Length: 213
Image (cartoon, rainbow, N blue to C red; front, side, top):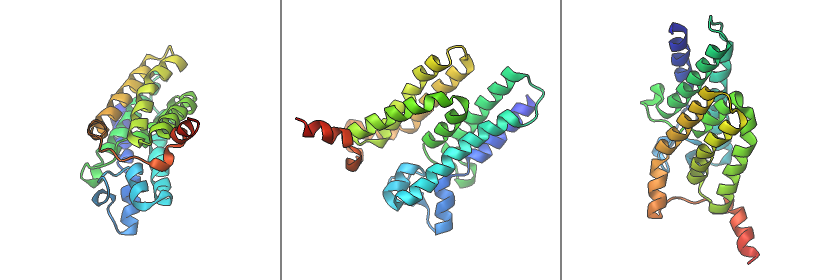
């Protein structure tokens, strides 16, 4: 238990390293004071452009992947199944660290990029279909938040299908989906009210469909 707690705390600390806030501090600004006020990749793209957003996403994905990878490789007395569960706990701790970063007053991002990083290590076969779902929703609606939520929910049946015998991973996918829905609750409310920001340039599929009719 001590090993697990130690790993989880370290994973949380790693997850608390926010890409947008770290790069923003180097540039002399706080991304939370612009746009939606969120310290995530979407707000970074809207307010600072794609180069800055790319750096943010790279950091946020990498820290999720690194937290799980290190958890699997730090020496432990646990056997293989226990070690895998430790990696799942550390992955979730890193995501929580991104959402509630200890270094930045517990005001972080929504966790999507960090979830992607953990899944890339824990269940890499789920990545291509998840990306496809995300692109299909984004290309047809233009809503990044909606695309992220749908992909997050799709993670649950995908993991069950790809890894049917790994119950802890199923629980992890369910926890990540729930967390993403929680952190995107504001997006859901704005979608309901019709005030959600839309990336019109991303609606490639919608334009193709309308163009044919």
